[in-house]
Length: 105
Image: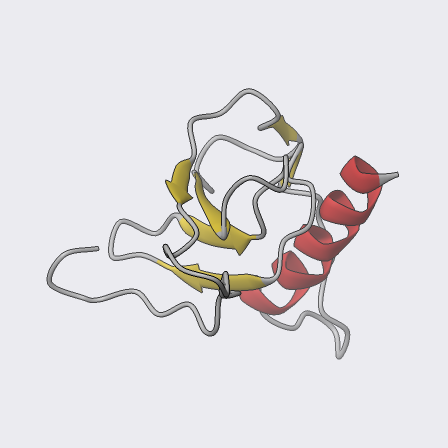
């Protein structure tokens, strides 16, 4: 179910990233295997940057970069992720907005 929701969310984003054709945006599944994508951005190299909560619940979040030049339907379940640890202290935080810094990517 999680993979299906991830694919559905990425498909919805692909519809808007690709632009409108004949009055209706196309929809393509660009990747599967990202449990719950919450925020999306494009980096300077044209990759889709996906932020989601830690899949195992042991991190505040995870970032996955999706190459858009390899065709659709990539299985990213084993792809490397940048893990964002919980803050130390009595109150773990959840993530806010994802923004790609143009100079660092």
